[in-house]
Structure formats: C-alpha cells, structure tokens
Length: 456
Image (cartoon, rainbow, N blue to C red; front, side, top):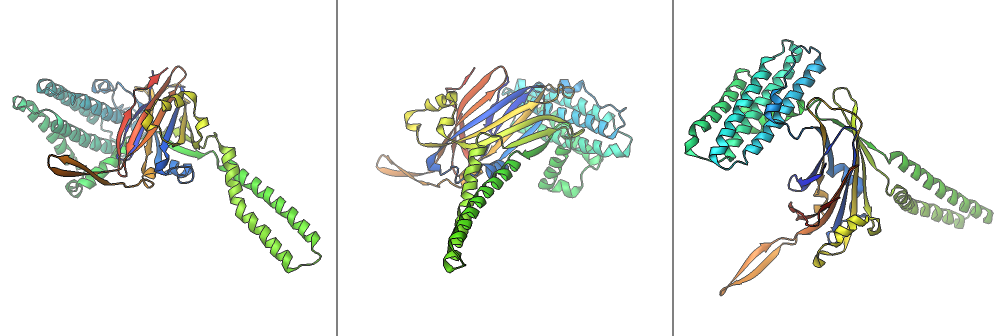
C-alpha cells in the first residue's frame, strides 16, 4: 500500500514524502489544530503569503529498490551522439549511482559489529569502483559533450570520496580490520588524486571548504537534469479575484450613484450641505469597499483550489504530473468526521481551544510509463514553520527544586504543541494518522506519531 511518510527536515521544517504510480491519482490532506494562545489565525497568518514563503513541492523519478548491483547493469551508450540524448543517459546513470550509493551506505551503517561492517564496506568499494570505471570508459570524443561528462565525473568522484569518509567516520572501530580500513582510505585517496590529475578543481577552490562544497552543489543540480522535474506554479484564483473585485466595485458604484442622483434632486443648487453629503458618500464608499471585497472573496473562494503545480520533464517539456493545492483557515464544522474523531481522542488536559487550518494536495500522473529503471514518481512537500515562530512568546523561566538542604534552579523554555492529522487517500486505501508537533521559538523539538494512527 502506498503511504505518506512525515518526518522532520530542518530545525523549523518538516517534510512529507509519498510515491505515485503511472496514471495514479491520490490526495493528501493535512489538518492543523493550532492552540489559540499561539496567536495564529486568519487575521495574523495570510494563506497566500504562507504558501509562497513556506511551502515547497519537489517531484522526481524514484526507485525504492535502487542499489549498486542494479545500477551495474546500466551503462552510458557511446553511440548516442545527440546532445540531449547523451546528457539524459549520462544524468540518469549518475543520479541512479548517487541514490544507490547513499542507500547502500545507509544500510551498511546499520551494521554495528566490525566483522559485519567491514566486509560490507569492502564490497561497496568494489562495486563503486567498477561503476566509476564503466562511466570513465565511455568518455565522449565530442567537445560539446565532454563538459557534461567532466561535470558529472567530477561530482561523482567527490561525492563518492565524501560518502566513504563519512562511512569510516561513523562506522565501528576495530584494530582487527586495519587492512580493510586502509583499503577504504586508499580508495578515497585514489579518487582525490584522480580529480587532481584531471584538473577538475583549482587549488583556490580546494583550499576553501565553502567554495568546493557550493561548487559540488551546483554540479549536483546539473546531473538532475531530466530526472528531477521542472515546476511551474499557476495561481488559480487570479482571474476569479479580479472578477470579484470588479463586481463589488460595480455594485458599490451603482449604489453610490443612486444616492448621488437622489441627493441632486433634493438640492436645487450646489450648496455646502450638498458638497458635505457627497464627501460623506464617497468617504463611506472608500471605507467599506475593501472590507466588502474581502468578505465577498472569502465567501466565494472557500473550498476552491488556489494553486496548481505542473511538473514537467526538463528534456522535452512534457507534463508528467500535476498537483492541485488548497490552503485555508476552516471552521470546526468543516472538519471531516474521521479527522474530528482522531482529534477528540486527545487526553483531557490537551483539549484546549484551537484554530484550524487545512492543506490539501490532489496529485495526478499523466503519463503511462516512466524512464527505464523507474516505477514511481516521488513527491516531497516541505513545510517551514518559521511564520509561526514570530507569534510565539519566549516564555523563559526558572524551575526550582529542593535537593536536601539546597535549592537548585534550572532554566526552562516555553513550548507549544500543534496537533496535525494526516490523511492520504488513494483509489484503494486511506491512511489517517495524528501527529503532535512540539516546538519553541527556535526549532521543532519533536514530532510524535500518536497511538490512534489507523489505516483503512
């Protein structure tokens, strides 16, 4: 069963990952129950500003079972002389190699015993070395294509070295496997020497950790061409907002003109009273025009989608999948029964007055098949909670305790808890879970999955 996975991203952000199959449609709903003492509501947190600044979507090809032996069966075809064809195949190979290496290194780090860890690490070195040789065997003779190869080769060599150094740093230590450890270090030194021989990076760049890291970040984005989709966001409310504004303005102007004409008929000539009356009428129009427009707009756009993301293949610009997004402050009676049931299962002391906000994303894949080696598309939505922090109180204080005859004190901070219900629906199943986000002014302290989580 396809599932959505929620996890912490950075200090003040969390992310949700889920997969899509060809021609599949699913929907992700998030219901935020925000305590009123946080001061966050429709008046203080604008949905459009929050979406534009704090909600990011990412989509790319994905293979959960992508490991180094699988990548070993793929190769870069030297016979493809077309510029886009070679670059796409090169990026596909490099992207798969990077993902597979990261996945296998992560699995190897789970081995805590040295007699299991070092043989697995040695096997990874052997497989990676063979894959890099396969890549370098097909160096294109065409100068137009050589720059693509050099960028990819430079990045993969650097990323491989960094990955194995991290593996050695975090793995178990044992003097019995000094030869295996030396072999891993030797492989890293070989890759470093290889990049020096190819003059991929200047000495000035190598001497500055920030410059070399940022350069490799750029090269990483270059090899994602054709694999990670380009995103195009469309505001679905733009024309509707213009229509509402025009209608409200027209209605107000008709009402004002009706009053003005009646006033003129009652005054035979222009007097101070007539001028004062017209000033009051136009003043009232300007005063209430914006309020009436906002009231009408909120009534009309309620429960309507606000944005649509189109994810396009960066090679041929074809639309692979679309994402239609809703985001709005809602009332308690708008909460679905299954979501309300989970929220009611909180402990009595946690049932405090709260404001509700709803995020929804309907996802649809438009193609019937993906690139070779990929069976799914992964979408990731990242929520940054920095907009919430500005309304929080610092609330630092002291906690006193008696230890024998001495009084001790400890600094404490004020924390807030947001209840978040996640509902992920596909054609065949529904996943619904409740999370508790504990945060302060500087970070999300914890994200806990509550026991009431259920799937139908």
